[in-house]
Length: 135
Ligand code: HEM
Image 1 (cartoon, helix red, strand yellow):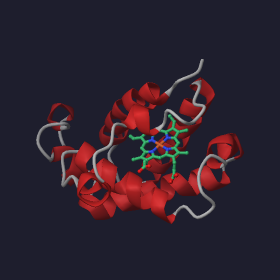
Image 2: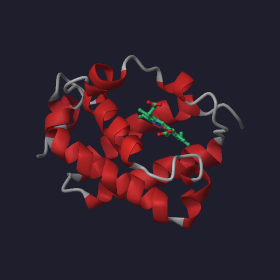
Image 3: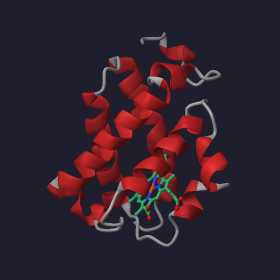
Image 4: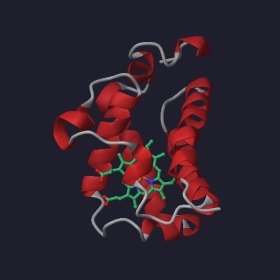
């Protein structure tokens, strides 16, 4: 679904445009697929458990609420603050950029307008930067 740019971020408009939970899950599966295979992402892949199933569910649930949809992460896993959830990890600009690269590629694989892709990548760069705790 395509919406005028200004409407993303209002209510659950982004969640709807992203295909609700089903669409978000597809996005997150593609995201972790890139993290699993891109040579540039191996340093961040190695921070994750071998089995990515729980990581996929957690990120998809988080993004559901983050996009204005149901707050599934909170219902299932409890309250989360993204920067402190990552404070035990060594995240510098290289790690942040590798994460965003996987997301950019995963977004491009979805049936999303270029506006929605651009909007999401720009918005996700904000929490990604807030996870950075090293140069
Ligand atoms: C900046 C680069 C980032 C790196 C290197 C990174 C890495 C990680 C790692 C290694 C985990 C632990 C996975 C596990 O134990 O299952 C994790 C968890 C998580 N990450 Fe990230 N992450 C980054 C950015 C983000 C961003 C921008 C978001 C949200 C938009 C996010 C959302 C989450 C969530 C929801 C969890 C699950 C936390 C939990 O329940 O323990 N991450 N991340």
